[in-house]
Image (cartoon, rainbow, N blue to C red):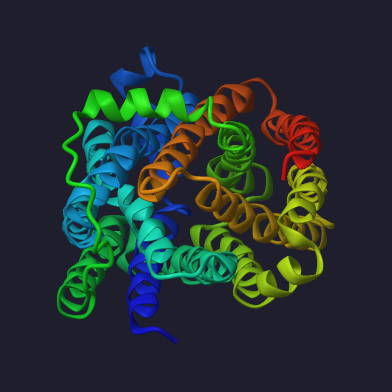
Amino acid sequence: MDRRIIVLFVTIFIDLLGFGIVIPILPNLAKELVEGKAIAETLDPDVAVGLVAAVFSVIQFLFAPIFGSISDRIGRRPIILGSILANALGYVLFGLAGSFLMLLLARVISGFGSANISASQAYIADISKPEERAKKMGIIGAAFGLGFVFGPPIGGWLFQIGGEKHGLEWVGFFTAVLCVLNFLWAYFALPESNLQKSGVKNKPVDTFKGMVKAWSIEVIGELLLINFIYISAFSMMQINASVLWKERYSLSPVQIGNIFGIIGVFSAIVQGTLIGYFQKRLGLRKMLIIGCPIAGLGLTLIPLPTLEWFYPIQIIAILLLAISNGLLMPSINSLVSLHSPAGSQGKMLGILQSMGSLARAVGPLLSGFLYAQYYALPYLSGGFLMIITLILVLMLSRKI
């Protein structure tokens, strides 16, 4: 395999490993830092869970298109390296977080650092032939899955090893060290891929104007909307599930981490080994169509089991979500890349990533509000959103 792909794989893996490590801990931690405190008078603890997840994604939303656009001008390498260091700082602060505001600051900085996904995707587009992009995007997608294979279990274990007093420090500092090691390797092993830099200096406001214009580009605009709705629905489960599993099924951080690890195993298998097969046998259009109802069913199943049926039903739901994610994400990324105007792949993929980040902000905020009303609402609503997504995909399929 191309060494550059390996370096990008590891970089994205560590990004998602860090994101995964905090998942078993972050939602319940945010709730605990609000409950019983003065801030609880103005901020509902369930809504606080959505807020602390949303702020990470809002920062990604703001900076992903900027980073993608800048990478078209100055290259992918500086963006990737700088964001790795920002991630390291964010996780150090996470390890030291003793208040809700400190936790918010840590997630803001980590959100800034994790906005490098667009530059990484553009790097892959730079070095890939059009017919190879879906497969290589799938390989990078496997890094997302592997981040969830190892991240949540490691987070749960580290928190348990560190105990009540030092659990956060173990989690935050461990992830920060990984980021520093990743920076050193990428610095020496990742050459620049964008050898035909545009040289055009865009102001940040121009980037967001370009984002608005992207919605009017045929196929691109529809894909942005489909991606936004799907990720909103998925992130409603992704953040809220830790609270659901702790409060209704009495799971510990280690058990929660292990369940998310199973999600990662299935996702890695699907995206790392089956994407090429899916694309060859189904094509990108059918991958989109089939993925939507599978995702909707998986989301709907999450809150339904009784204690006795918890694990069998959850495994079925997780398998469905992994398959749907493996069908939807690489096909969306590849179609955006293939339909991007010449010289704007980094910008278009940055906009796609940014809209995904906005969806990851909207989803948790919505799930926090819905969960406060009734525990199953975030998941039933996610299933309904996937019905809407399927309708949009069927309309788009005529064009692609």
